Amino acid sequence: MRKNIYILLAFVFFLVISCQKTELKTYDADANVYFDLTPEARDSIVYTFAYEMTRASDTLYIPVRLMGNRVGNQRYFQVYVEKDSSTARSNEHYQALSVEYPLEADQGTGYVPLIIHNTKDLEEKSVSLILKLKASSDFGINDPRLIRTYIVLSARLEKPNWWGNWPLGEYSRVRHQLFFIATEQRQLSTEGLDAPKNLYFANLLTIMLNDPFKWVADHPEKGYVLESKDNGQSYIFYHKDNPNRPILLKKNTGVGKFFFIDESGKELR
Image (cartoon, rainbow, N blue to C red; front, side, top):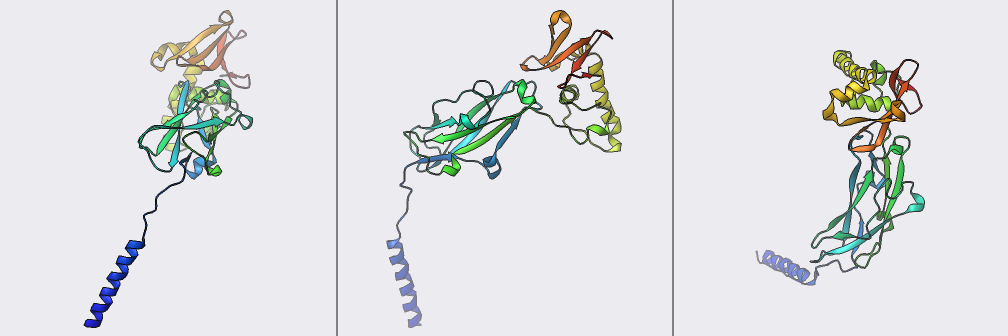
C-alpha cells in the first residue's frame, strides 16, 4: 500500500515539474498574408458568363488569410495583376484593382473584390489573369506558393451531349444562347419519356426564330430589345441591362424575312 502511495506522489511531482517547464508558445513572427483557396481553386478559378447574357458584370471575392496575430486596428494588404502573363485587359474584362485592400480590426480574413465584365469577345475565347499578393507596410508574403491565383473568364457555350436528341437544329453557340433565352433551360434529358416536355422546349426556340419581333413584343418581362441598324436592314438583339452581348438579326432580301446570324455567319432557321 505504502509503495503505491510513493508511486502516486512521484507521478504527481513529475506532472508539477513538467507543467512548470512547459512554456506557452505564441506566434511572434511578422504578420503575413496568403490566398486562402481550396486545392481546386488554387490551380485555377474559372468563371463563365455563358448563361448570363443579362448580367453586365459580377464580382469575385477572393479570400486572403492572415498568418499572424489579429490586432485591434485596420491593416492593409496589396495585390497586383501580373500583366505579362495575363490576357485579360484592365477596364475591359475586369475593373482596375485598388492600391490596397483592408483587413478589418480583429479579423483573420479579408477579400479582393475582383469586378469582372461580361464582354462579347468572351463568347469566342477565354481570357485569364494572374493575381499576386505583394508585401505592404502591414504584411509580408513569406510563402511564394500561396500568393498567386490564376483566374479564367469565359462566356463560351459548348455543345451539350443532349443537343442531337431533339429537333433543335444544327448546333451553334448563338443558337444555343437563343435556346436558353427562349426556354430558360440549361439542359434537357435524353429520356424518351421526356419527349413531350422537350419537344415543347424545342418549339419555343422555333417560335422565336420564326418571328423575333413578335417574340420580343410578347415577352416584355424578359427585357430583350431589338435595335435597328442600317435603316432597318439589320438589328441587334440584346438584353437592356447588358448591350455588350448582342446577337445580329439580318434581313434576307431574297425571302423578305429576318434571321438571326450565328458566329459563322449562317442564318438560323
